[in-house]
Amino acid sequence: MRYLIDSNIIIYFITGSASDEVLMTIKKILISSFFTSIISRIEVLGWNKHTEESYRMTHDLLKFSTVIPVDEAVANHAIHIRQNSNIKLPDAVIAATAINLSATLITRNYKDFTSVKGIDIINPFESQ
Image (tube, rainbow, N blue to C red; front, top):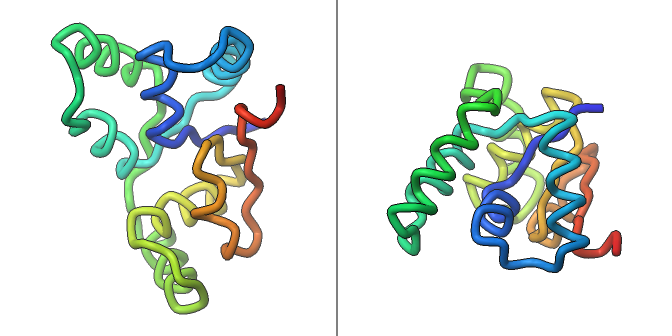
């Protein structure tokens, strides 16, 4: 199975700001398959609440990820998503990336993606 990890999941993992059970679930997902959208990479490295240590940890963690760029297929799918749902551009790109990769999106912000057809989502905070 392929997983596309949303930026909020990386931040919860790096900061340890979730229950031990959720952190273990996230760790298992990261070990099994770790893809990120270029949008999530930008969001998580640009997060303005990083400490020097959390930034370094995030940068090091992302070295193990396959970062998926916005290519023509992702861009076209994101356009289609934006035309058919009320979704922010970064979320449309993330959703299009997950769909084009045939990956399950791992996010706590699943409500941001409910209007997108054809996307599989796991919220590790609800699988407790």
